[in-house]
Length: 529
Image (tube, rainbow, N blue to C red; front, side, top):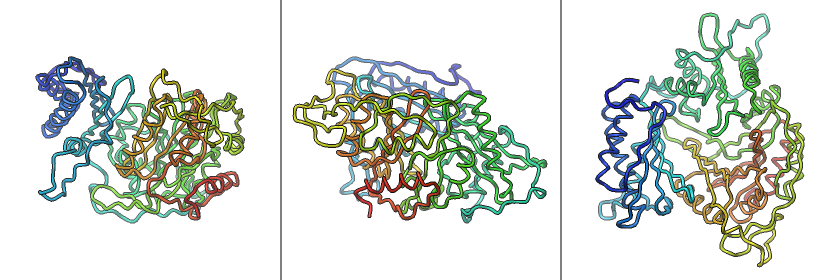
């Protein structure tokens, strides 16, 4: 990393400043120097100036009372192929869902500046997130990626590759392949492999940018494996993709084989290679997403030792596009979640709603894991002294105790996959304000036209059974399965659909336990026909 100016930590550097506009130029200079060293050019640096001005002004003018003296911080951090800027303050609580929506296409007579700042931030950054941290304040987060060539820049989209299983190649006709970790210079060929297999339809946009593929592997967020011919051509790719908060588990994903090499068992060999790598790292387990437009990938995953444990319904847009191509989000497809333990599963009490315990027990049995239900939690109150719901879903008595008003506030962690139009909510702390926080978050996500909202509840956390009932009975969530999450978590999965109706008849399933789960979900879905 080159450039003039201060020698910043290439990973993270933070600046704490008083809440006075006189310090805005100092913050802009700090960010300007950092992003210049990361590699952003002058035009991008000007965008950062505007981003910082908008975010800092919002904090100074909106987070504190007039005349109140306080400090807030701005942190710059390297992320794969880009930079993340986090503005943190401990000022007044803020609900971004209440910000008016700016409409640039409105006529001049009705046009106002309301919501313009948020609109501009979304236009200038690749990712804009708001994190309400309760008593710890709040973060506004921006991510901007470096400009880099994409393998899709060369021409118009081609037809998507066929979905059916390839004809196996006879053993004597199989080509010699070498499977190993991806080398940086192979990233361009990996991107071309993704394009060959999926054209413009792959939902992980990073896989079309060689620089980002290299950066993700260097950061440890992804471990790519490639199958290479003796001539040096990349024939296939697969990767372990790690969650943000753990390296104990990983998603075996981004499996792609060039059309001319299909039938060579390349995907299976890549999967076995990555499983060995995961064992060598002492990881807890691997999970995988299996498509349901056919059963071929399900059979492939089962041969690799994965067992089905849940659904992500309406998870995949029927037609996805790349930049500049219209996107259609109806007729959404489903994925099946599969898991494979790499370490012996633990037998710990899990907080599961009574009505789902038999199904959850069956899913853990399918995984080859024990299941012990913890005693039912008391009813979850509304947080304002009103009655909540009993763990079986029935209304609680009027004198049922609410959540502890003196306990810690709720923590919500929300991420949004824009290309899928899917949000994922995790709740590490249940506070007395849980109901209000969840309703605000649902309103915000729906207003942003997020089609599917997934909630992952840690079943090892007390009260998760009562919170699940709250989500189902009061907020329209639907139980769709489980997912082991590592040595400290096992997740209960619930989904909420925003204007989406699941086409259960279009879902193709191989295993009987998975068909049983699908029928169970369908029976609980009030929209199902």
